[in-house]
Amino acid sequence: MEEMIDLEGLTEEEKTLILSVIKRDEELRKEQDTRASQLRSEIHNLRLQSVIRDGDDLSKICARCHKPFGFFFNTGDICSQCKFRVCGVCRESLLTGKWLCTLCYKQVQLKGLTGEWIQDNMNNEKQRLSQSGADLVKASLKHSLSNADL
Ligand SMILES: [Zn+2]
Ligand SMILES: [Zn+2]
Image 1 (cartoon, rainbow, N blue to C red):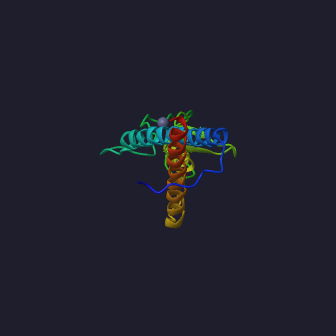
Image 2: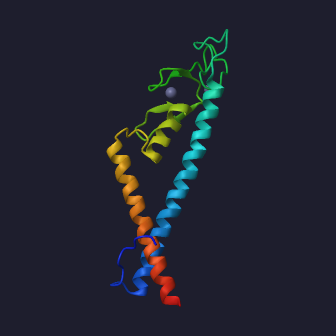
């Protein structure tokens, strides 16, 4: 038998409320996971697409979509993050008025979503702890609710 948290002091209503909060939290987490894995595959595809082949001159073609730059129009600009020259299509505007190439932009998005830029193990540890805490409360609640139903 798993260890349970003592939730005897709670009313059924409170228990149901807590369960719904935990459920929403889970759904949110799932949504984030879905978005994160979507972003990861987009980044993967962009990287594949960006692979430089023999004879490619990155001063003449977009580093992302490999379309050739024009002489006067669409001559490309340097992405402030990766320093590659990209065309006007392969850019995403930031709130700051700056822009990043599509690859850098998606990487920033992914980092914001998953907190992957935090290399700090302490933070990962904390996250794991709070997650198992929620699981424990949920298990305890389900246990106590199903008992009440009997
Ligand atoms: Zn491009
Ligand atoms: Zn870039």
